[in-house]
Length: 317
Image (cartoon, rainbow, N blue to C red):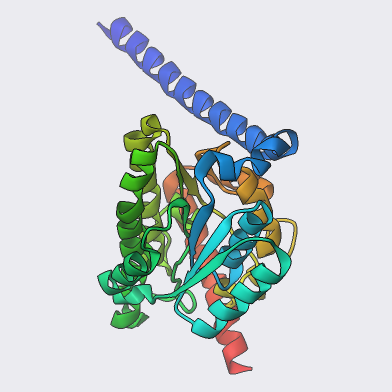
């Protein structure tokens, strides 16, 4: 009896080791593919209009990743619908794109912290424009790493409505028309914070976990209908969203600027359904996922404590 139990435990242990070995190998394969695919598939970059359609809608498109992503799509000949809450920035971005690329643009002023009201504005303004690519980029972060009790209640509601509500309702708005046409792409921008519970950014990270799970479920529902549903999970990008610490606000090898990130991320569209969007971020994601979740959580909490101290120190000075 003891020998049988010992054999069963050995087999169970081998199965666990095999599971983790296969998981590591699969993630490594995705990392290599993410790094090499944009280098060997330049024709994919030029075929987005043919593959998905001539119009793209990008939310949060006047700063950071959203603006850079819209610009990259315009370079490839795609007409752009810019959606943001600031009309001055919208008009400025529209002029920049039209001055540099031979594409049409449309601007829609919408504040997604208003929830369904903002989505209804987008629906009315779009009219009959056939959106072939939807980029759900708009997002809201904490002002700086905070304990839950410190975060204003209004800010928590805004994070939930923007990060969860907007991505859900905009996917609902466009996915059926894409299904009927038999082509289209939805890009939902999440965050590396989805990889574990994240102390001091508790609600923000939880909303990004929602985006990941929501997007992967959409892949199951609509991939067989001819649609591309992509989940993007960038690590730190040098944008104003990370203004609270110079450690992650300045450009470096592992913290690209928005333009570098977007150029690479767009090249993965139609190639990778799940991606960090940038080659060094793929490396970070691979090594981040190796330790157990509880270790990742404590490392994330420790880093956020450092970022919090940076912000408070700079605030005093």
